[in-house]
Image (cartoon, rainbow, N blue to C red):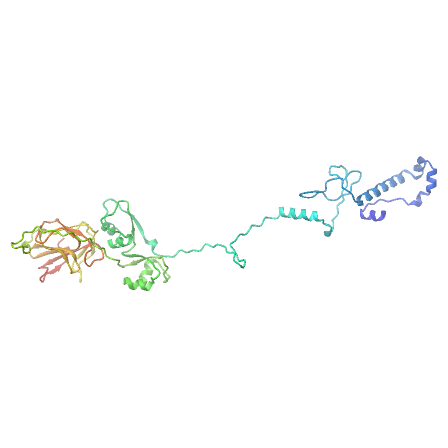
Length: 413
């Protein structure tokens, strides 16, 4: 047993053999203690004492019992096992000798494994918790931001703030578009009711601004508004010929619905009447000597010039703008005609020279009435066959109703 303990703790202690003592138990009792120590020698006595201490310590280390110091607690194990020589097993002793050796893996106790798990948990990085939503098969649905922007013509639009003195015709002339383009783009109700500070959308070109619906295709829009598909694509900077619901498109040259002109109130002619209640007598002047004509509107923006098939000039403006007589003369017609001109006024100026004012929203004179140069004869509109508010101004040489010829009005303005 002593040899097995000695090899386990690796203590290099050399014990004297019993034969070297050369005395028996009986002889030891017969000798006095002092003589016995003297006979053995000091070195042998010291070796025997050390051997006895080592054997006692070895016996105590393997004997089951309560340790003298703390070995654990709620947070894990205490210090490792040790062999104390000449002192207690508490951690506050001085001069203790600790054994350093590696225990096999199967010698780890439950307490130690729990402590190791707690220590590993505190040291290991915390793994982020993953929350749903999950499908029934455990698939994680992760939200992904999808780019849903669709290229269209909304970025081509400009914004203008109405200033004092602005009219729709002036704003349209400034941006080189027609007044009806502004009318359609801004869904206006009256062209003469602009408010200072009001914001207007200004399309890049004359035409119609449209938002694509579920029934719209590139081909159907091109056919409906009589424009080419390539013109729509190039104007809006599109490469995909498939349209998307809600997409804003600029349709160059397209036309929307016309403006419904208010019905003018009837006026009673102030011209003298023949006895018997017949129609008023019209006596136009014989000669005209008034010089150049005055502009019949405040706007000088011509949206369409005199050319073959259009024997007049169209002066752009807003509904309700005043229309003046270009020269003095006599009104020979005032009212509605089914010739496409809607509400209109004809004036004879003498020397077989006549002027007509078409698409008016209201008429302010009556047949047979004499008017002076610059006198208001009505207001601008879009009555008759017209898609926008403007004045269709004609100058005739010869009777309007009997073989007259229309000439370029710019030659007289």
